[in-house]
Image (cartoon, rainbow, N blue to C red; front, side):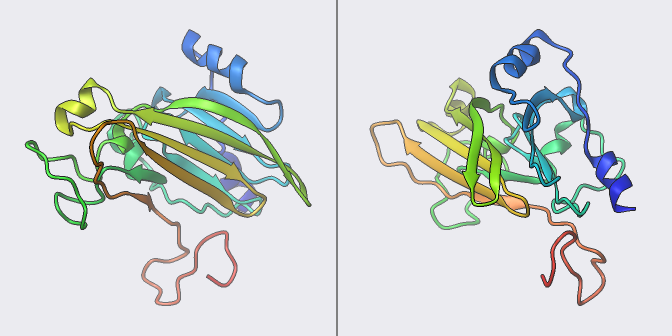
Length: 219
């Protein structure tokens, strides 16, 4: 049933490291935002809307997995039996591809490199950090958000020698997810890149020509 599926997807999470405990103390908001260790022991930020919807934002890859509506509909798809102790966490849910989407030279603007860039770029398999959490308010009441960020490092420059700083904000409405991404060139030369939010959407029956998105109406 939807409520049972809802509870299975809501990975309660644990706090099993001093780093996660420190993040939990700094960024958690009772009833709305929690920082714990999720699937594969990876740190995540859990956003919960007063209406019952929720999502988890993993610091590994900045991946949003899962996003579940108040009616129990899972929006971002994850197959059963996945071993999240491996890099497969970044293969599901939705994550930011940067500085390229897909394979080498698949999209116009994909930067040249002496070494082939990983498929979908660098950020979906890198560790992000929490910049801020909080609550916004609209006509229906308060709703939570988290802002995470990532910058170039020695590891990224060894593959793609450019300087950047990316900020991604995820805000959870009752029945919508608002994701905004800002890319800043922190170097002294032109920054050419392509990017995309790569989402895996859950559908009722992939073989049905009239398949609907789970959790949505008339989609």
